Image (cartoon, rainbow, N blue to C red; front, side, top):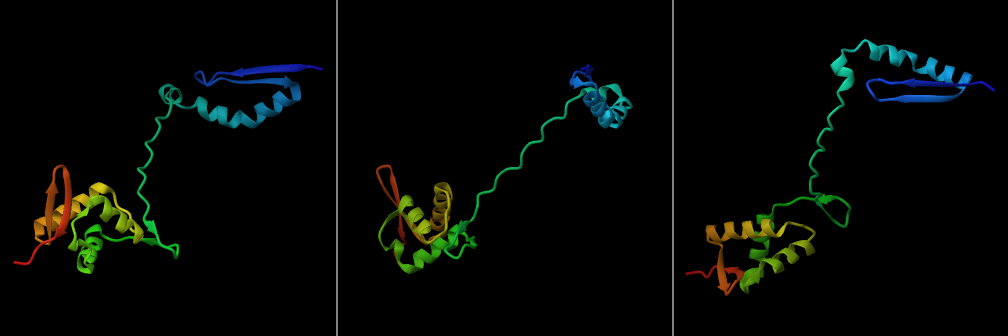
Length: 143
């Protein structure tokens, strides 16, 4: 049985075919139009590899409620509703507040919760209670 071998070097993107003559001839006939189109390209275009495109940044998914729908909300709005419900009558840590929000089905980063608590304290709704290195937030006393 006769065998044939063909090596095609398209600027070192080497394609090597080896096998029975009919197989090699069939493959060459199939790829001939593509090879002809590549020969017409300028030298520098055929030799340059494509640069990988950067992947898009992943967005954080919204918290999913029991109904299966995504639930978006503002952190400061959720904290204000807890403030009105009386959660801040006692000093609360950031961890407690974040846990309370996650139980409600709304997830935020600890830095996001901290920043919004700071905004509420600057607005005059909350007092910052410091004890050593710990920071807690409490409803501002009415004067």
